[in-house]
Image (cartoon, rainbow, N blue to C red; front, side, top):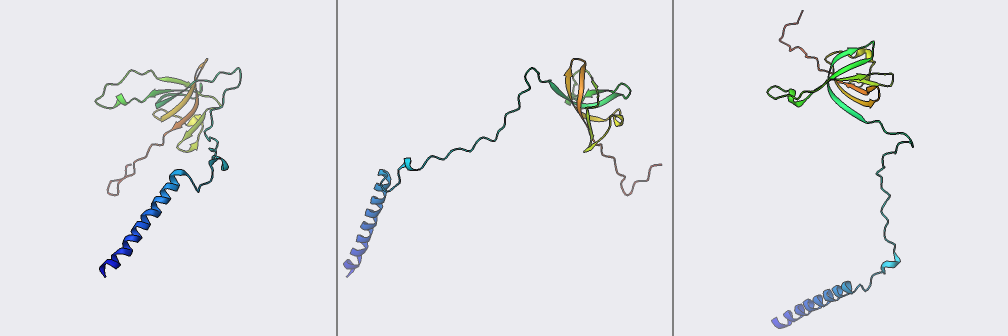
Length: 164
């Protein structure tokens, strides 16, 4: 009796292996699949990376530079500012590099922003911390954009006496 119960199970296992072998054989030979030529290969979408526009013929691009520092002089009449570059070497305990201040000419096209608000050149003052992008022109450096940092004003602590 035991033998009869064992025999069908063995036959089922052999049949399962035979089906598995047949499926693998069909996969390897490629039978039962559609030919590759019937479906075209998918095309890659066009690249979304745009190249920089080339300058107009006959015009050379103006080289620009950026200076990060502090305004050390302002001439509102001559529309000029002088910026001393802030260097990492200016930190206490470090030797600083000798850096020449940059005198920058302002004009009507200079964009000036304090924080996020546009301001006029008349609001610039000494000790303002700025990021200036400027162009090197034949007449000297000309400021294109000036970003003035908003300095946080200290708020008095609740227990501190009010200053007169």
